Length: 369
Image 1 (cartoon, helix red, strand yellow):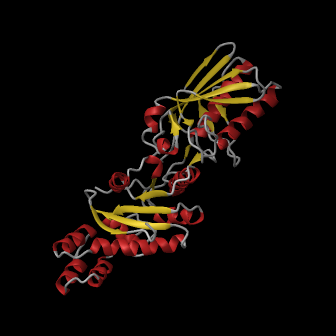
Image 2 (spheres, rainbow, N blue to C red; image 1 turned 90 degrees about the horizontal axis):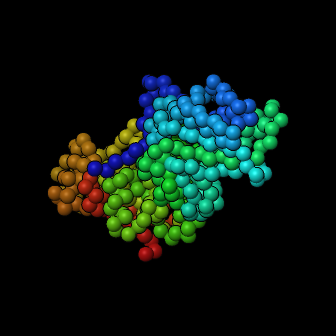
Image 3 (cartoon, rainbow, N blue to C red; image 1 turned 90 degrees about the vertical axis):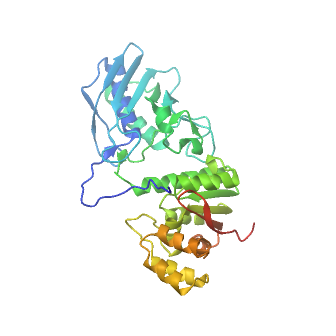
């Protein structure tokens, strides 16, 4: 069954914000550094986030000897469906002979292996914003205690390598664990912007790798189909989910020469009708529109009426198949037209429409093979 993991918002339910892995790492590192200087841990630790908020974090675990301090903090992602909610984020801080702060990836934190991300190949996957958060908060501690800031900081996430399998890290070239993320330190629950940011990252990595052809898919079924068709690896797949508009607009300004859009019949029927957000709460399949496409494809009057009376896209497709009407091809052609309009000619696009089992039921090919 074609699926999408796009965020789903309930406007009637107030949602609780949470903290990013970056904020948790900064809090753990700050508390550990303070203990390294003073010889004791605080009961809790307050840090300053990039926009000025000052949250307080409880210390879940602590360990101290003469040269090393370790603090673990349990991540609270609020009401966001975050795979790292409840994860243990650990910072080990120790004195270093080198000047400044050195960042290292501990167990469960990945390493960058492909260009195109915010960090160089070989670097621990601790993003620039969390690094700046850590540096700022440790600098404040150093200033208060008039201490040197020559330390090595190792960030770990327990069970991080297993958790990373539920993310896009492998296809981005982040191997061995999770990324330490968060530009603001705050997790906005069910954030669409986070999904679109991930889409952009995948495109950036593809461009940096010089890929000539990528696929943007609406879910796991269409991803499997297009992967088998072209022999793609994960680097070539953009998991756009319901955010067709977000993916296409970014491709317009950051083009990949050839992009295959692959998705379920219902999702791409919405795109064919001009909808760029394919989520069920924000767009619906229009069976009258499908009936018009069937009519243009040569369907008999009885078939047109049956399609218009259908309650679902799947029913409409079944009626068309039974009457040997190429409705899938018609949807693909119109979806391709809508997509080309969004990229303004910057990308050559083909569209592949699949049924719930992943079998192709429609296709509109590239202008240039």
